[in-house]
Image 1 (cartoon, rainbow, N blue to C red):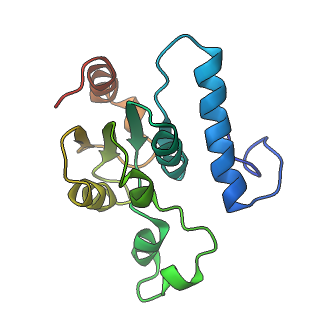
Image 2: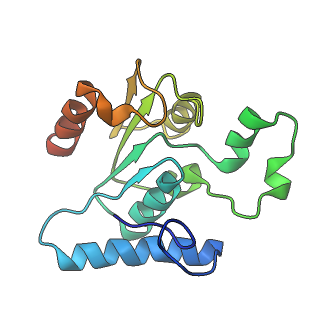
Length: 165
């Protein structure tokens, strides 16, 4: 499991271009080191990195847990009226990364998520209307407890093994 620079035990200077480059480096390393299909997987903020790596590397699938459309679109959830598109230093635009992605997109999100509202996943789904997109909403879940529910691993197994659409 990879932590982005300046987070957790990972050092380095926090720069947007370097963060996105790191995501590509991690994907390329995993792809060369393992004789298995590699599916970029991101949770919360990490969904921006997974979407970027999947799009740039042309992976057949990407899996996002509790994603956001973009930080500019998520910001008003916290402070309405602030012009986030003008003040954000790092855009983290998941939608822009996925716009030209040709592979299958799997999203799982808790309906009771207060950190990244499930509406963000619906924004992604509506803006990327196409085949190969599957959104699973877990009604009883919040932001950090998805993996605790039996439906989580069942859905992951189904989606990773045989796409649902």
